[in-house]
Image (cartoon, rainbow, N blue to C red; front, side, top):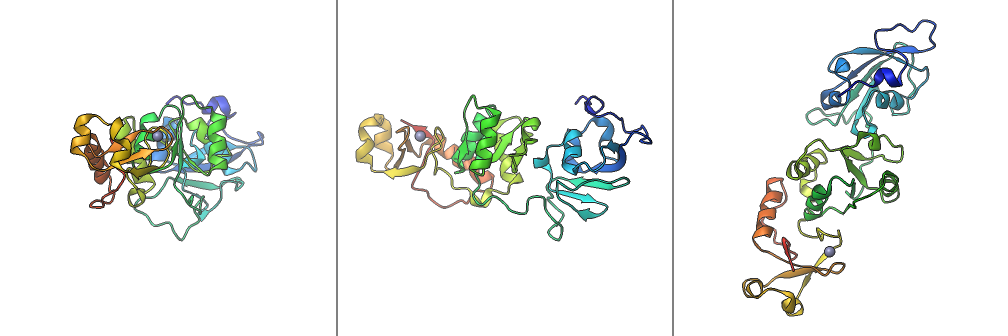
Length: 280
Ligand SMILES: [Zn+2]
């Protein structure tokens, strides 16, 4: 990752501030947040010259870390909001989502989880969007989709933004977002399920993977004429999407996807009446 710090900021960390009007603040970023920093700043304390009274959010994003990736900021040991102003000599510690360390006594930056887990994925994450729909999570996806539209959907419909574009996550209208690290669709789905702890709220095969609309059971007689002969003979349960009219049944592809979701922790043993995996 190339360092852009000197290009966007007047001082490198080694320079002094006297007479410059800037103030020296000590930063330390933890765990995977280091991946967003220029290498010289990773995994150790460093001093950084900041405009006086700048909100801490502005400084951490200047350093390359989108605010959506941050779970907790401590200044001089006290948890603060993103808008907290920094002062000379402050020590700022920035943490990602904790997995093993209970921070409940401290202030989380986003104390309110979004009530319904809904997503908007950027144009590069189509396969992930389909996987999330398969798991039952309402996910808007379009290609192309403008950044403004993503921000609007995030704000207006309280959707979590999924992207590999960290600049997008710096937009103020986006309060909840995930920088997706994994590169394959399968690994991306696993990453999001683990990061957001979604296993217990999956509702596999309740949404159409193509258009994100609800699936509902449909009597075989009503769809029989649209089914291939061998499917009509072998299957008795079907579901359909009112938007695209696709018919779904519990074929081998369905079983494979069911196995994938079970491996991610989706409830097993519960039979859905809406199967998917093969469409007519
Ligand atoms: Zn559909």
